Length: 482
Image (cartoon, rainbow, N blue to C red; front, side, top):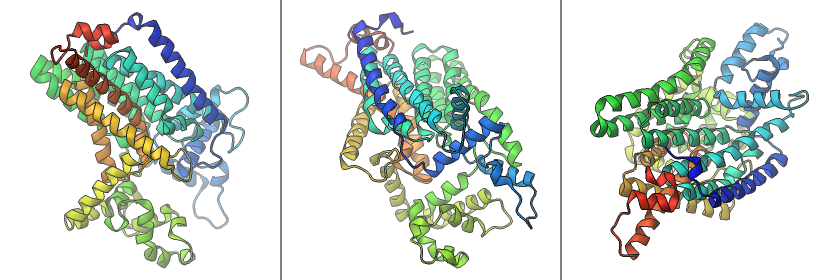
């Protein structure tokens, strides 16, 4: 087990500098946020305000539940409709925001535009992620690898922009880094408690970012496959089971609540059918904008008011509602899921070459583009920096997995691959790589640490690998248990 007292004082000083710089950059972003919030950010904000004011998980305000003259629906029915629609968004970000309102001095929320406490919460979360990045690098290899990983996370622009927006990615990045830190300690120490804690943290990940739903499942499978033949199948089954039990313990209370509200099974969120439909719709190239272009004629036929409007300004919800209306006997999400299955039959089986090209394009799109943090346009310099960091991180990660056969790094790599696969099938944006960037950057630093050590050992005429003792002496306690 790594010991804090074994970390060199110089590493603590370096970490303090990194925290001050990274926290300062994020403080500036929190104090100077983007003037316009995205639709998702507004949804998180409105849900948080309803939780804080009325303890209701809904995006509708009281103004939104007024019954218009001649309406056949009661106010209670409209409120329930708002609660069901709010289940489209995972709960942890709204609840963290609601907690920020409760902790902030004064009377909050004072109005719809009262978001200062939320930006402060984003600052705290994104700054804490720097510290967790250090911890992950430390337990992977050692203290200075942790400092390097923390510096990469602190200075990576899209992560630094987190407090400027009010999205779930900063909280997702924090929990993903925490979960893989606990999982690394589980691999290093083999203590059962770490497997359970890692699962609980993955549960927090799922309640923040549902696109990572399959990551803990495959990490549990990896634990079983690796531990079974090496330390015994009983221990492998126990470790994998504890990981999954931790997930279930954290997620199941919300699943029960959400399922009761919607009258259908909701594991974490509803609305997965829309992402799957868009992602598998070949004429729309798997993107929302291209889908609106491909279906504009159908949209205009139902809504003539959109005839002279650019397709980019047509609300995606309107287009998806029209697609769902093809199956009036089904709920919206079920109807879109059915259309997505039809897409797979028609395009994946009917035109596998073009469908495969679309999948490859979306995978590249996810990792060659960066989360813009509310900016309207991309910057070529930021794009080049992002691609360079992704490439360096991937090289280090692959080196660590192949050369060192480190199951902790393999778990991180597997999680990244699974998440990428989900988005190649659903919707892919640069924004979706953000929760994974801290662990990719830190894992890359770990791999590069080992690569450089082997290169230096080879130049010195030593054996290809160094002893655990020499590794520990050069980089701290994490190396001794790697």
